[in-house]
Length: 300
Image (cartoon, rainbow, N blue to C red; front, side, top):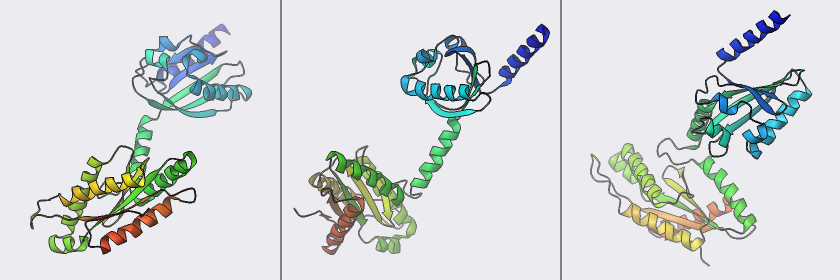
């Protein structure tokens, strides 16, 4: 019997050695065993013997402990959890070698004896790929600016918060004057490059919190959180002036252009993202009808 138990223990140890996952065995809230697997940054001895409450911050301890309790209530049934370890939040893991945030997909499984096996798989690469795919789905492939769908999502969320907390925000719609003429005179590639130059220029002017999107073939939208209407008009004037000074060398000759800009600001509790955009487009129409190369805002 003793030999059988010893053989099982050796098989168990061998299984842990070849496992690519980080495996932790929990008994009565304490780490009884730890095997790093492919997490070669982990110093196992730092984790072994630690109590979960001392090992994890409160916001991570709660879901992990809940998963363990569910596993113990149903021995043999897997309990799954996804979480991220951040070195600035998990001092014990930082001491054990954690240097950058790592996402894990974990499975908790309890034995009838009460021990809980916590197997954690590093899914950082999967998360990076997901973010890349998601980011590509939200971006205009030509300019790298966000697309209309991403803009509406951000505007709707931000406007709702602004209304709730009595904040302010504004939006500008930027339209290239005579864009079809530029395409006819210099070719479509010149028009594409000009748009890219304008987007680059706006990125240099805008704040981190501002959100730039391509709204149409020759239209861009810049959404400005925590910016009142007058500040929005001033920002639009900076964009107009930047574009007017832009000169792009090209094979068929130097390419330049001007823009017309329509601006609107958040107006009371009945307003919304769609309403703001509609008014900005109406003001853009006025700017274009007045000869272009100008900014048009809302009257008081």
